Length: 246
Image (cartoon, rainbow, N blue to C red; front, side):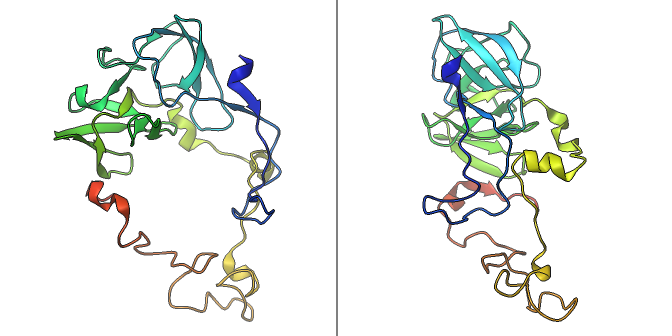
């Protein structure tokens, strides 16, 4: 159990030189990081769910798995997974909640989460509470996935994914209630750009309520903040079959 947890180091959005690179971070409560098994690479070894736990570092719950070889690992807990349920990874696994299989053996319409973009790297897509992707089509060495954003994207079919929809669906309805709770989470206040001075934000300066003073809103770093902000020639454009709905 000790190897699965370690104390999270506080960085408060600073890089190695001490400069703030991510704003609005700092002051969080002391917490343990849980080592999550995103790769699910224990092929053919059955595991039993021995606990379902809260994880302060993510929106969904996690499940502690005891494998037949004695090893324990944390996985993301899908909706419907219960104590003492069995999970397994591999090409021959049953298409059942909590099992992990390569995408090429999954039939069209299968609901999955923790999807690998690069085979062997570990799951990167659909890892937040209540999210999932749907296998929409098979095309050569790729599988078309319908993502939570409604984007349809090609993913290599040798990558693994876990069957089911992630649990804690009602997280999006959570009301934080007070500023103090956000501070415990390590989230500092956000101030409107127009309320700042010109050195602190592109929208800053001017007398009284004078607006942003430019044709289009800008981010803190001076880049466009509205409209089409995606790079014109991004490496992943060739994998997108249908763009997300805004």
